[in-house]
Picture 1 (tube, rainbow, N blue to C red):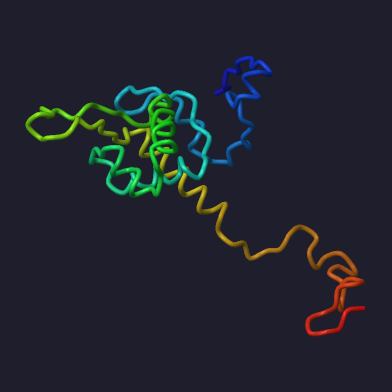
Picture 2 (cartoon, rainbow, N blue to C red; picture 1 turned 180 degrees about the horizontal axis):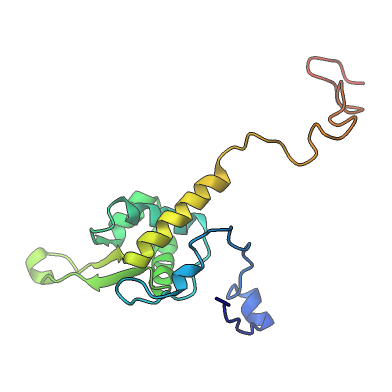
Length: 171
């Protein structure tokens, strides 16, 4: 499946409409989600996976069958309205979550109606894959950077010039 590209203007790029993303890993589910899901929902452009997006996806994934209101999501994710609602809007534009207004009479409950957000089937798959990939990217690796210990004289025995070895005096 070849993804269609759309032209981006420099102004759109500078204002964040186009973000550079690394290509998905072999076997990643993030690209194939652009096809139809069980309910016929077609995913839009996937959102940039920022820390705030991952926090919200984690909260919504705790119980994907329950619709939650924004304040509840914000408290659980540690985000305030200015960081929360733009991300929820992007997730809804990407067709990963659905939102509906609460079906209550504000005069009866003594508060305004709340907007309820819930992951849809595409969103559940996307959230699981995105969080798994983020965990993998952030987990400590058992290996050092390329070349570490394989290049003669690197790392230098006794430390680099001007930097003492552990416990030694400066050179």
